Image (cartoon, rainbow, N blue to C red; front, side, top):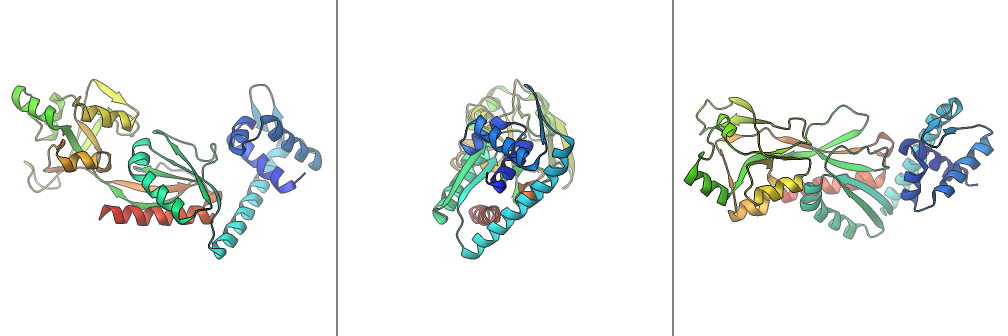
Length: 309
């Protein structure tokens, strides 16, 4: 038995909460993963995991061993990363998560460039709107847009993004002909069909700040509760609904860059600004020293800064 490999497997089983999840990560069978942990238990002469048909939990001995094992595994990974960094060669898997819209439209081109620069690196890109547990799913790094909740993750701010109020030009024409007229003030949104993205904590509460041309003094803040016939947890559904003229969206610029540039979409209430959203790269504490994670973070930050110019 390779003691370090067995220890790494044990740590991942505890973090993921199941043998099957780790088996999928490793491209192995569930039986093989279970046998590695069982061999470790025999070598230690202690039962580490309590197994039932429905649950998996640490024994008292397992709890004590897990904290030490996780620390040792992290130290080994850090040492290997430092060595690779010194050799200027990155290799192996990097597991990255992002929201669907941002991942497809903005992050994927950066990933392609990163792979071109580091031909021995392989990236597993997971795109999902909503909360993703990095530790449970064995992810190295995630890009998150919006204010972060308190957590044990290590965060690196890489920029900000701005939201705007948008509608398809055909919808704007219909509103101008038949009413209600396109909104000029946040309070007027109550009369309109708004598309609500439910993955933000604010959901149907849209915030605005008066700019120089607004009907109220600059800096005046307004938060309004909107309503509409469609709400969704998918940024891609919001994008499709806006482009189909189904309602007014309140979305980051990058979701509609091309359509705004072409004039297909119109910015509503341009005299009212929206609070910026921070963008962070977050990693589990045990992966913050990984050379791949550091290199990827620096690459993403530089690429997004360059593309924003």
